[in-house]
Image 1 (cartoon, rainbow, N blue to C red):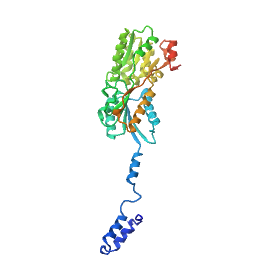
Image 2 (cartoon, rainbow, N blue to C red; image 1 turned 120 degrees about the horizontal axis):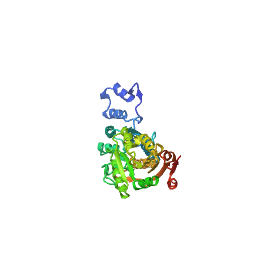
Image 3 (cartoon, rainbow, N blue to C red; image 1 turned 45 degrees about the horizontal axis):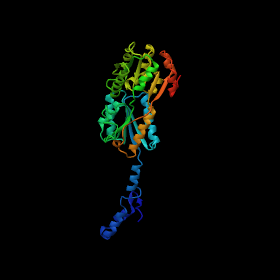
Image 4 (cartoon, helix red, strand yellow; image 1 turned 90 degrees about the vertical axis):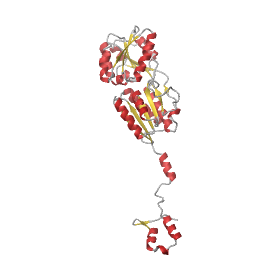
Length: 353
């Protein structure tokens, strides 16, 4: 039977029903006429069409970071590119919502609650404070952490095995031994290492403990100075003047956000900065020995894509990236009175003039 045709908003079959007395029509005929005019028309999607449309709906990924600075921005770019290379591209089948906490843990908690209410397909939390906030806000939405130095100490996971929870991710944990060796090459008479850190960041305090232990094995002292806020960094690093031979900077978000202050003090004191991320070399460090931030982000993006494809976060083991990259700056070395040794130049992946 052909579908009902409309005439002035009333179907022809219904018009016929109105013209005839109900008694004049058999119940069977009336039922047939009404059935022919039922709401099921070609203009409405079938259950199969609805399922197909739902399957084609874009995936939604929420991304947050405690603050924006070059190293974290590079990681976020890597996440987006990692998703794209694994089949999820913004503007096609992916919607990304990024929120920065602007350096505030209170903001991080509010963002985490918002994301939990939005119920995206996955949340990527860059840095320890943001990951902790998101982990506290949801136990159901898949969470992928990135740039978390000590995920076990931060109580995100029990170990690097599959967690069985809604959390997995990629750690930026680095061995500190090679960092000390690099500082000894830059300053052969190295006796003391300066370290400015945020006492409220687990990733920073974790690095401090490992740095102190490893340096003690070689008879090297570590002079640690806390900086609660980015605004405190300049005063903190200046307090190291005359006490240390080099200053080591980890991926402490307050410190990295104020790296220009670190650089200013470094030049004033003629003390080299040695960093954990390549971006800090462009901002004043003499050298950086660390993992590829972009590669870290891409690995995080690939892990997130696995979840979007149906894998549970708790089935994916946490990871760290293998291999360290050395980046050096001749300009920044000269500014603090250092000539980069030939063996350091040979080992460097990139030499900035």
